[in-house]
Image 1 (cartoon, one colour):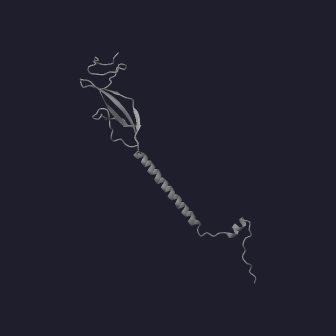
Image 2 (cartoon, rainbow, N blue to C red):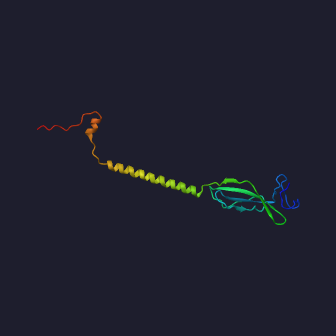
Image 3 (tube, helix red, strand yellow):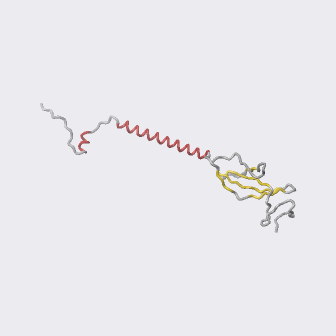
Length: 151
């Protein structure tokens, strides 16, 4: 059983015997960033077997699919798409770089705040009287008394 609108002829099309779908006499690669709707298309290079995709952003997730194209002698093109493959390009995306930069700036500000707090505590306790007699009592010693004044 064939699912074609016109009679099938081996002269102009190759079909898979099991599914009745066109096999294709050329192909194209379609890709898009994962959360977008529009597919970009890349045609094969001169040898017809390889495709080079330019302009991908580093650290970005993409959906990629291959379309098998069957061009009839009438010029009508039939496309059969592969399943979608998910890839991630190498490198760091600009979004990730911005997050790391923000975290670095926050850590630097936290460090500066800590240094300022330490400086304030040190300056506050600087020049303060030291209660010797109280410390002596805490350690179990007799307080140091001045010499008696014998007149």
